[in-house]
Length: 288
Image (tube, rainbow, N blue to C red; front, side, top):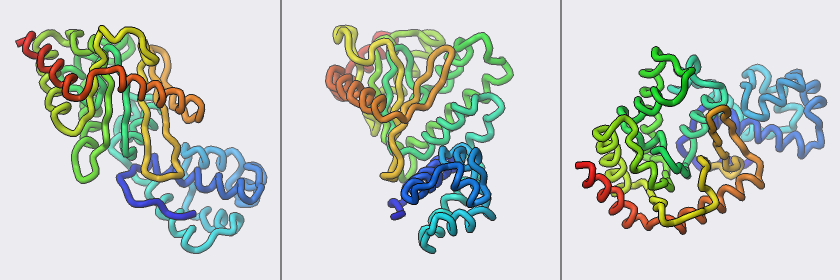
């Protein structure tokens, strides 16, 4: 159980890594979830949830797990740091009353990721939205969003963007359909300010590639997808998919490989970084 290099993380990512490490060690010992749950006193269903990062390991149970799993002292020490980190209350937990469990988990994974790759055909991704654009998107986003929750949703979206700054900023790469640059979400003035925000980001650390209308069909057309990557080699990439009626985190390897290859292909077909910035500025000039 070698320790990974230090990097930005979150309680969600630490709980997930703890679970993965426990699962890998259990499998090395040839134990089933039921057998390990009984031997440790954690219980099979609880252990399964812990291994998936969706439930926390109680501090008083770690010594029992360490004994059954035959762990060295340094391994136990690292697992305890992960366990303690998983107990932290993070900013995104303040919004559990307005978001699904799956989206809260996504926010936690995003908060501890090192890179974020996204394709959006018609809208600007949340990490790059201005507050006014976000408000217009949220108000028009669905009949079941309560008006009383709009401010909190906008606030949470702005807080997500804090990962783009600081000592270890999130590496953000976006392929953005040209339609997203023209759709007047919130009206001309809101779109104008949004394009200014995109131009500033594209002229900085964010890799923004515009997919022009002239590009025609490509593997991601008609889709919206986000790929998160992490510093620890123990953690696989995670795919976030969201539609009008569903949200899902996907870690199936074949799906991840397919989407990653499609994203790379889209990056190749889109305009270069320099030409993308020029296109954004051109459309901004038209609005002004």
